[in-house]
Amino acid sequence: MSIISLAEVEIIENTRHIPLIYSVCSDYGVPVAEPFFDYDEEGEPQDFGIDLEPEGPNLEDLESVDLSQFIYDVSPSQFTETAIRVPTVGKVDPFSFVGREYLRRIYDTPAQRLLLKAGRQIEKSTSLGNKLLCYACLNSNFKCLFVAPSAEQSKVFSNDRIKDIIENSPMLAAYTNTKMNQNVFFKKLINFSQIRLRYAYLNADRVRGIPADLVLVDEIQDILIDNIPVIEQCAFHSPYKLFVYSGTPKSLDNTIEHYWSNFSTQNEWVVPCERHGTPKNSSTWHWNILTESNIGKEGLVCDKCGESISASHPMAMWAAMNPIMEDNKDKVTFEGYRIPQIMVPWVDWKEVLQHQEQYSRAQFHNEKLGLSYDSGVRPLTRGQLKRCCKPEIRLGDIEHFKRLSQGNQIYCGIDWGSGENTYTVISFGGYFGTGNFSVFWIHRFTGQDLDPERQLDTICQMIAQLNVQLVGTDYGGGFYPNDRLTRVFGPQKIMKYQYNPKQKKKIYWEQTLGRFMCHRTEVMSDMFGAIKRKLIDLPNWDDFRDPYGKDCLNIFSEFNDRLRIIEYKKKPGTTDDAFHSMLYCFFVSMLQHPRPDITARQKDSGLPRGQS
View 1 (tube, rainbow, N blue to C red):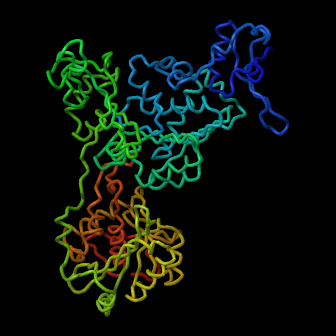
View 2: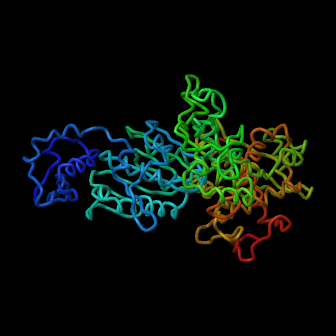
View 3: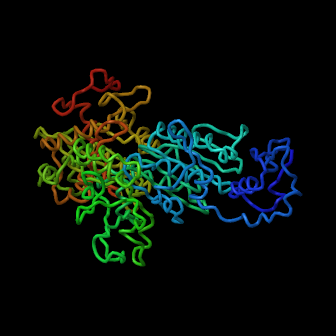
């Protein structure tokens, strides 16, 4: 067997040019088999080359060929067209940008940060998979990290966008062999590049500590915005630091809209209508940004004259609505692209018109047009919150609160925070003869009090001085602070609460874990309902408004397609710690003062021993 060793040929230094070797060998009639990998006795790779069929020429036969003429940088789009085969109905076809000209710039952009805001089924995930494979194959020792909201979504992406593509593409198959580690969440190529797949929904713990050169986040609209900085730190040590985020927008308060409106170039595919202005002077034409106003009865129409236009017009192009300028270059760090369904070549126009009639306004804007829609319903209004604020409850000195607590059962709620866009907030409340639960003291820890030890010392002092009966704490805040409180006050006083959006019961005591498990949406809804019905008294509005009132008003509701439930989120870049602190305080009080008018106690909740 004749072998052309890459080291011997001396025309490449990394595997980015392997497709060109294939091309060279093919041009000179050399049948090409898959690359080989030699190992030493310890299993370490030693050499890499391309095996040729027995009838192929020896290396000397190619000495007269100037192989250097074939060496050039390969762009992701060129690699995609050359190497990637896409399975379709009944066959496998080479990937082509014909009809997809708008994607070429997205593939080849030199931007380090890329954001795709798109409608459904516009090859968003396909583009992510192709870019991932391009970078992994074209660069040796390149580490890729893909993150989705759920494990199932990561598995589907791994099988459909990576495994199937590699198996159907001979060139890509050459980058793997049976000795390489290949599973659903981890894939290794023979050029030492790695592809890891993870998921992050409520937290990013599964992503922490994974080094990456390229970070891809799909369905970012369903990932909590607080998890994004954690995911990004995976690329901290990388010389590349490449990020690609994509998703289908929801409300104007969603994660994807936060990055799109505040930090991206907001590129739109603009389509000209030559009927306006001078025919041969494109600067005088009317340029359409594709929205619902461009939907005609038979296809795209100009939003100015109503005549037919084409998204594949040779002059159609990407245009930045928020271009990078000298005064915003430090803020606009994402190159953003919006891709609505109405611009793709395979759009079924009858289906578009049908869905325009059948879908809700939010669904049509989100799923078809790739536009955010302000469908989020705020569970509380400023007026509802203000009506619960009592002028006589003032956030004053500790002596006033100590006198107020004498002879009354006092309860405490703590929501732990890190000090980085989330703060530790402690609330105190009880019943003082009005029939309502009164939150009479609430405090956010900032500045020097962010120090964990100083914070815990202050909290322990507060609890002791007010002779608190029960303390409800945020389990997700970490083991150490809850453990410290338990050791100081005992397990009968410290009650931990953990949110779980998937459980069927509203709230129950999990004996094996030693904490209450709460359905997040359900218990938050109960708290909102109690405030709306004025069953909870809050401090004076002037004292409570900022930051505690803002924390309550930062929350909005949104439908989660994956879990098929309404869930509560906070506006990106804001806090909601005070609300959760009051919730823990109120719910822990129900262990001694049940409120069936607000929330029904589960018959099989199995309360901890000693609690009624």
